[in-house]
Length: 48
View 1 (cartoon, rainbow, N blue to C red):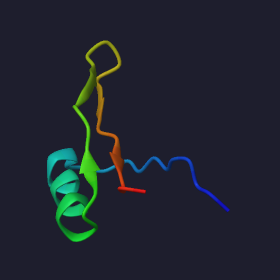
View 2: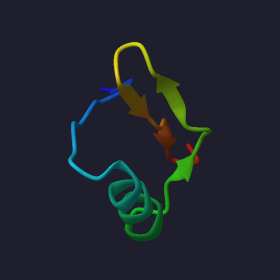
View 3: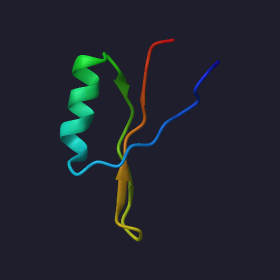
View 4: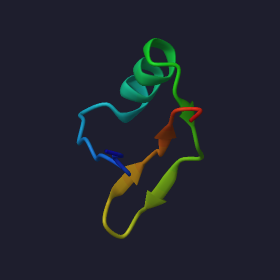
Protein backbone atom coordinates (compact mmCIF):
# COMPACT_ATOMS: atom_id res chain seq x y z
CA UNK A 1 0.00 0.00 0.00
CA UNK A 2 1.20 3.50 -0.77
CA UNK A 3 -0.22 6.75 0.60
CA UNK A 4 0.12 9.60 -1.90
CA UNK A 5 -0.67 12.49 0.44
CA UNK A 6 -2.44 13.51 3.62
CA UNK A 7 -3.74 16.96 4.52
CA UNK A 8 -3.81 18.15 8.13
CA UNK A 9 -5.33 21.48 9.17
CA UNK A 10 -3.43 23.15 12.00
CA UNK A 11 -3.61 26.39 13.97
CA UNK A 12 0.07 27.29 13.54
CA UNK A 13 1.44 26.23 10.17
CA UNK A 14 5.06 27.25 10.83
CA UNK A 15 5.28 25.43 14.17
CA UNK A 16 3.90 22.22 12.68
CA UNK A 17 6.20 22.45 9.63
CA UNK A 18 9.18 22.70 11.98
CA UNK A 19 7.88 19.80 14.10
CA UNK A 20 7.49 17.39 11.16
CA UNK A 21 10.80 18.49 9.66
CA UNK A 22 12.67 17.97 12.92
CA UNK A 23 11.08 14.84 14.41
CA UNK A 24 10.18 12.93 11.23
CA UNK A 25 13.10 14.20 9.12
CA UNK A 26 10.72 15.35 6.40
CA UNK A 27 11.81 17.60 3.54
CA UNK A 28 9.81 20.79 3.11
CA UNK A 29 8.90 22.46 -0.16
CA UNK A 30 8.17 26.13 -0.71
CA UNK A 31 5.21 27.70 1.02
CA UNK A 32 2.06 27.84 -1.10
CA UNK A 33 -0.20 30.84 -0.52
CA UNK A 34 -3.67 31.58 -1.83
CA UNK A 35 -4.58 35.04 -0.47
CA UNK A 36 -8.01 35.00 -2.12
CA UNK A 37 -9.02 31.95 -0.07
CA UNK A 38 -6.84 32.93 2.92
CA UNK A 39 -5.05 29.59 2.66
CA UNK A 40 -1.41 28.57 3.00
CA UNK A 41 0.32 25.18 3.02
CA UNK A 42 3.56 23.28 2.70
CA UNK A 43 4.22 19.96 1.03
CA UNK A 44 6.42 17.80 3.23
CA UNK A 45 7.87 14.51 2.04
CA UNK A 46 10.12 11.66 3.03
CA UNK A 47 13.23 10.80 1.04
CA UNK A 48 11.72 7.62 -0.45
